[in-house]
Amino acid sequence: MTLIDDAAGPDPTDALSSVPAAGSRRGTPPVGRLKFCYGPMDCGKSTLALQIDHNHARQGRRGLVLVRHDRSGAPQISSRIGLTRQAVEVGEDTDVRELVRQEWAQGRHVDYVVVDEAQFLSPGQVDQLAELADEVEIDVYCFGIATDFRSRLFPGAARLFELADELQPVQVEVLCWCGLPGRFNARVVEGEVVREGDTVVVADTEQSVVETSASARFEAEFATVRYQVLCRRHFRSGDLGPVTAHHGQLRLT
Image (cartoon, helix red, strand yellow):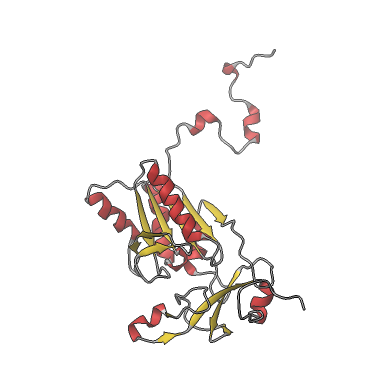
């Protein structure tokens, strides 16, 4: 057995690894994480957000739950399977750091932040979340859609892709009507896929839902809007699939 003499100096093989030795890491201060979980509509992002909050709260951690434009129109996180959780609505000019400071002012510690519909945040607000993770050591969990109805990145989602420590696609697979994996959120108005319009229009994936455009609420304008998840081929062609009178398997003949 060969003994290594500590007096001989540092091991030259250390230069072969970019990972610092365990002793070196002990002096590194803990930092928070900024994580972005993303996927198309109906893949369970809001359900996962509520589960993350539940798991942390059970361990005695105190969290701040935020949302921007929930489908319900209320300041809450609402899941399609029926779970809901009251949340703080993030406005266009909200400084999310100030929301944490307000919790501190009321004597409440904040260990983590959960943000649903994070794609609607501004790039500046995403920068604020990164600052909370780095400077205050708060774990930040963001959930949202990556691309809009034009298949282009939301500004908030794009900034999260640039800054997040962890990027995690939600693993629940959503299918296009043809059976292929669906990735694109088509906006459907009166049965037709539309390619132009406001970036933010809050609606649902159900056929019969009638919602208002987020940008038109103050103008009292209403439109029949829904979303349908499609594969790339059918998103590009605007093919919404065959219309069936009832739910069930499509006939092969």
